[in-house]
Image (cartoon, rainbow, N blue to C red; front, side, top):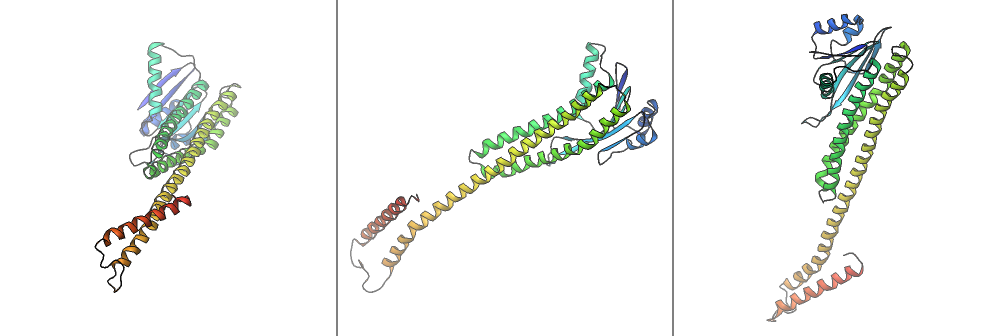
Length: 305
């Protein structure tokens, strides 16, 4: 599927799940080298930068929201940029680019024309993509807020898995964005060296790099928050377990003397105290209650309860 958007002095061509004929048609239209054309015919597992005197290729992988299996997956986007054109190639639906196309179609229907140039549109494209990543981060941050509320509502055990899932999400996001750093810097440097867009492109390149840096910093911040929440959750779990162990220990301390008293008076030996007394049960019960009171007073004085 081929989408074309013409702007001042250039065109953006977006190829979604393209056939080999569609790729070769677009490569021929913009005189893109055979090497670059071959690279975009199939997915590339790692980031890539390539180019020649008139064209630059950048391959990046952008994260998408977690699927039902809890995994954060990625979508590849290939950028081919020349002085008067931008070609993007993708092998599946990318929501952020789909929304950008809808916005551009609406703008064309209302305004009819646009004054952006190729370098401006390239900045818009990257800003839109990194904004989509920022939205993904905000969604995960909302989950952190929910986990925090559950954690302090006494559901520490249930939140252990939730915190781990969110932390893993941020870890995968950070890994993907870190992999953008070196290829994106080389790609922008290549465009600057070829002088496709003039001296003003330096500022645009800096803003594109800053977008990536801002998103990466945001991920690291929320990863730190998730780490703190995990440590707090573990502390709450340990405190709760200590309280349970303390309660069980106190019960044991109180019950042991009662068991000893019951064992002594339960022996069927000659000379057992109160053996023939008709009120023996009530006397033994009073002794037990008195023992409980003494033990409880002792524990209270020691501030163990």
